[in-house]
Every structure is written in structure tokens, then in C-alpha cells.
Length: 139
Image 1: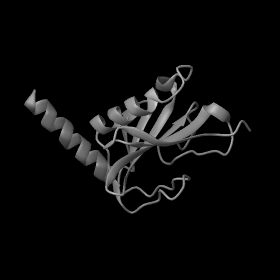
Image 2: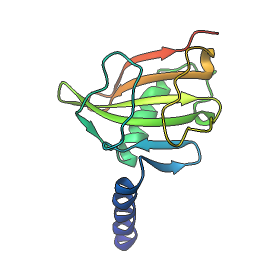
Image 3: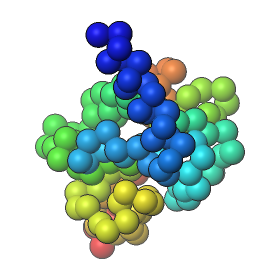
């Protein structure tokens, strides 16, 4: 069990150094702190970035999902994550898309329309709250 955990950590570290995103499932990708990503969301393009670990992603998903309508099938969305430190708190920017575009694994896809097919939020994992949430306009 300990060997598997060490292997997982090493694999995570190697992939963090190699790719701009870390794939954790077919629908979930984490941007590393080194990745150059533009977040179209207030003033979140901070130099204070961190690479979230799986436990932090799971916590952010749990918090964010609890604030959404039960009609939204959260698990069916493609999700990008970026870790940001604001005012000393760890925040995770969550970007959700109902469709996978060709650049999903390389960049954030943030269209200006599309309604509930595209939305995003900022989750404070230190305080266990969704700080903000934006759903795209219908068109």
C-alpha cells in the first residue's frame, strides 16, 4: 500500500513537470502552477498559483456541486481546475463544459454564450465555500 502511494506521488510530480495539465480522469484536468493560463474571471490571473492535488480537487467538486441545482448533472461535465492563492486562502477555479472541445486538454475554453452548457466558479477550499459562480448567457 505504501509503495503504491509513493508511486502515485512520483507519477504526479513527474507529470506536473512534463505537462501543462494533469489528467485525473477522461473529464478532469488540473492546470499546474507553471502553466500559462488566462482565466476570464475578475482579476484571478495571479502569480500566486499552486497545483491542486486530488484531495483538493475532490473537496472543491464537493463544495461547488452542493451549491448547484440538482438538475445539473455535474459528473457529466468536462472540468478544468486551476489553483490560486488569494488573500492567503487556497482557491480552486473550476471551469465546466458540457462538450469537449479540441483544446480542452491544453487550455481553458471559456465561450461567451452557451447557457448552462458552460459555467465556472471559484471555490475556497480553506473556508469550504463557493466564493463566486458564473453561468454563461444563453447565446
